[in-house]
Length: 231
Image 1 (cartoon, rainbow, N blue to C red):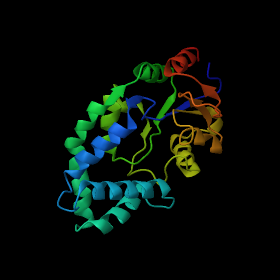
Image 2: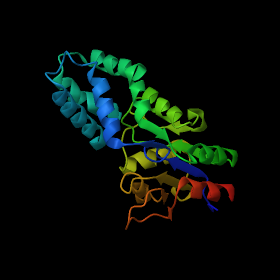
Image 3: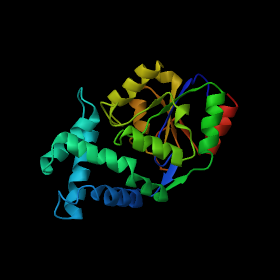
Image 4: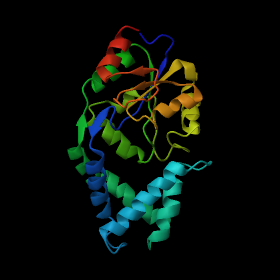
């Protein structure tokens, strides 16, 4: 039983969907590069700036949406105006981003735990790292076999002004969903990014088997499903 919990924050990658980080990032970069072959001398140069721009998003901590941090950096290294650069990424997410489904998989009990939580009346938030456009995040949720409409909020690059584990990210979500930290449970596989929710008083559930990581609960999604069913 999840006593006192009314709201569930779910991580996506490695929690509700299954992916091999190295294969995912290699495929992502390879497919995105097809839209910028006229701007970089080689694939390695593109990857360098793609990663550096993403790191700027993760470090961003101001009143701008994190997507602005990426383009502030990336646009310095292409001979394109900002809107054209953004349009190329949108085109990528609309088209060959779909190739990433091949390196994404479903996780046991992911669909069941979301469905049961919804039926039990929990408020659901997809608290994924907001480094992708909304369209790309929606696609990845569907690849996990989950209906994006089940979530009241889905974080993405155009609605988030901070990233995990920045306390601002978690506090913003609490405010948006109108929940108290002690009534909220963050479920995820990452001991730093997801368990970082504890900084603001949110309770935590670690789905991975890292040793020495502090969390209020530890267990699989099947274990979580049983807890929710008993609530």
